[in-house]
Amino acid sequence: MTDETAAAAPRPRITILYCTQCNWLLRAGWMAQELLQTFGQEIGEVALLPGTGGHFEIRCNDDLIWERKRDGGFPGPKELKQRLRDIIWPDRDLGHTDRAGTSEGSAEQGDAPGPV
Image (tube, rainbow, N blue to C red; front, side):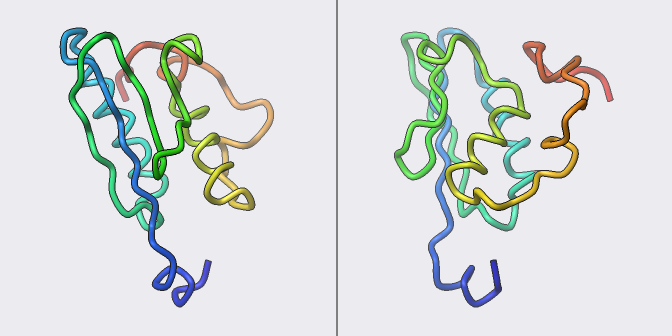
């Protein structure tokens, strides 16, 4: 994407709806940080939306890209980044995240980020 194209096209808004009753704020913040770290120049906004009822949903411009109940749990950073990329920037290479044979370990399959 050129600078002119980036200036002309509105950047996507990502929303993360999380359940306050389930204490999923930390998880929502972690997902927001992962998306901002990878797509910081391409994303217009990441908003955390407190909710109730066990909801955990991630949307891009109102398009549902992850829903905890529908998708069978919480996303790992790798899968979430790939889903967002596939919707907004299908030609973008995510580097090691896209490489076959990368480790599927620790934080990507766990419930929270591990020690660095």
